[in-house]
Length: 193
Image (cartoon, rainbow, N blue to C red):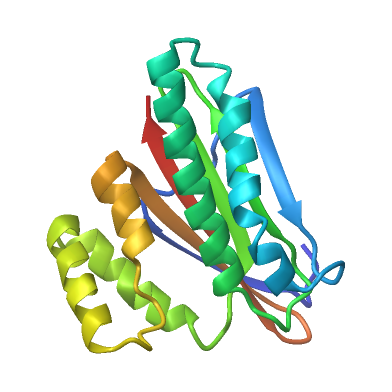
């Protein structure tokens, strides 16, 4: 490792740091600079639907296929939206979302650089997700959003993923110190099938 790089890693929740390659995977990457992020925001749904259509072929029963498409589309879209919404605009790091198929689960991973002013607030919310009842926290977050429309990290999408899809979720924060500090956030969702 280069001596001028200092890396600190923090893991929260159910994050598998040494995930084995499943053999069947798909990754979509958005690089900075080719188009303004506001223009790409509209493509999140298209990208999520593409992932859903791609993985639905592995579930031949039509009722299962429809459920898989809906679930994959929702989770992938939520991860992409969060990655774009909370990214560090000053960073040149790309935004990625990947999906891997295993015998017993689908594993989503989104990766983005995080806005440094929002990292600690996000980690505090993650601690709430990990330690509180997700159903009660969902209701609490709805009430909080109704009281304060400017609340910047509602977390309702993440809580929906946990509550409605019984998914495991985890995060890895990697802070790299070069000329300036960059924090890369990876969010992992494990959906049992």
